[in-house]
Amino acid sequence: MKVEKNDRLILLTNDDGLYAEGLRTLTEVMQEFGKVVVVSTMESRSGMSQALTVKMPIRVKLLDETETKRVYACSGTPTDGVKIAINQLLEREPDWVVSGINHGANASVSIIYSGTMAAAIEGCLYGIDSVGFSLNNFSSGADFAPAKKYVREVMENVAANKLPKGVCLNVNIPSCESEQVRGVRICRQARGNWREEFEKRRDPMGKTYYWLTGIFQNHEPEASDTDEWALANNYVSVVPVSVDMTSHDYINVLKKQMNGDRAGS
Image 1 (cartoon, rainbow, N blue to C red):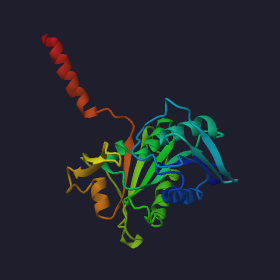
Image 2: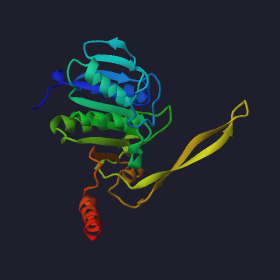
Image 3: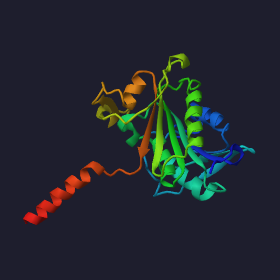
Image 4: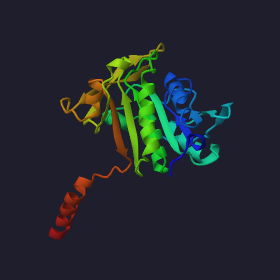
């Protein structure tokens, strides 16, 4: 059943904190689609993935309320925020969960670590149409204005075509001028990994600590159907993400292996 704008309830969150420019931009655009409830942490929770707060209480504070928007600060993780909003803060289950716009891309394997996409995946687990948006620019002064057009385009499609159960969208927007964006490409997740390295440092007291750095390695840089290729070539990448992490191609192989081992024992 099609939901009209006046009836649509949208839960917004992110992992960059309540005052991040990406969240402000997303809130501005999403108010065109319905009533918005923002639940976000006061500070960055980047790289939290699907983490939950289990050893301390979660605190929530209402900061702003109008007829079309409510804003809450939450002490927990992005996933905590989605859960507590759906279970305690909202008058009903939202029609959409929309996360971002993240400072920095969440393409390829980065989705595993992303708090932005974890929030979208959490919404998906509730059976809610959910989308995570990221801009391929880590700068605190990144220009999010060109992203507005593509947030609208993706969400207009979601409004017209409900997502399948168990599927959310991972949308990454290239960091370039609006006229340089070449369009939208529906992609698959590139195969790659982060090669983590730790810098050994000393604090002012002379004690050793380690600072995480990392280099992303794209294992298929020439493959033109991936999100990494799309971003490198100034396309907006849209990857449908399944919450089912089963390796379906390997099930029958593993069955034969395991059944064969038992038969021979």
